[in-house]
Image (cartoon, rainbow over all chains, first blue to last red; front, side, top):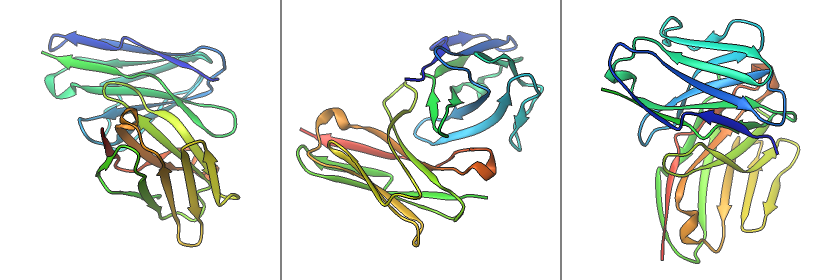
Length: 114
Length: 113
């Protein structure tokens, strides 16, 4: 089946540094990828939608200059958290739209900013 | 836009009993309703889905029912096992909104051995 590989699974960084999270579709082409943020015991919050070769569409309230999304190829999308602060600590999950209208999710990245 | 509500937020059942989680949606144009299971520290995994042209779908111990008129759908897990313990999310989407998923708030299911 369609698999999305997400890396790293966890990362700890210092305040002010940037962190890049990668999501790769392993056996299919992902023209559309979604990035979510999830706080403990809460649902997934859509941050942005990225389409291959075009600029990402950000949800209201999400800072596009802080959360940089790149979808330069049909198999790779990246989320870079720039100038990270402790309040950016969260669980970030990507997902890709697959044929038939379903989603497949990455395994998530636990970001801790200290 | 679409609004998906999910109940209950927590559910505890004895092993072997059934568990039912219910979701309602607001947009009558929604036509795809997946259910995801999320274990601690992991991404959501699709466990079953249903489309608006079907009223019920079953896969072994898991079943989903859809009532389009009432705009609600439910997840049924029979003969629950401890490994069924996880957080379950429902979602709704339609092509008119670019297949964007609208998630429910999640149900934390605990199966007591």
